[in-house]
Image 1 (cartoon, one colour):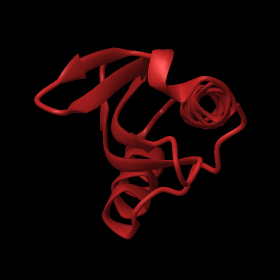
Image 2 (tube, helix red, strand yellow):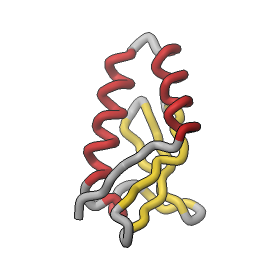
Image 3 (tube, rainbow, N blue to C red):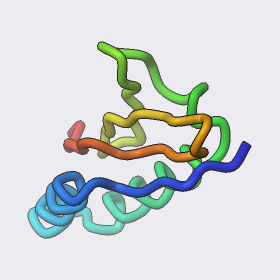
Image 4 (cartoon, rainbow, N blue to C red):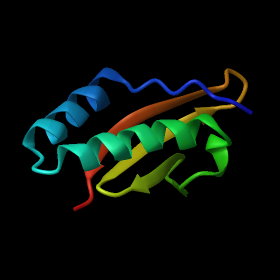
Length: 83
């Protein structure tokens, strides 16, 4: 199943902050793009379940997201740098 993967505004803003502060901007860009690609397909099977949400990591980023199979939507709710 293919999902649409929007990032909520606060997650987009945090990703921008991480990017602008990073010395390895390409690694941050690559990780964000990979997260989008992976979550588009079988998002419910990605990462681990934590408190009703899912957590998925592609270094140097980790995202928290939720999945709505009925809507085929994955909302990225938060992002942080892992390293």
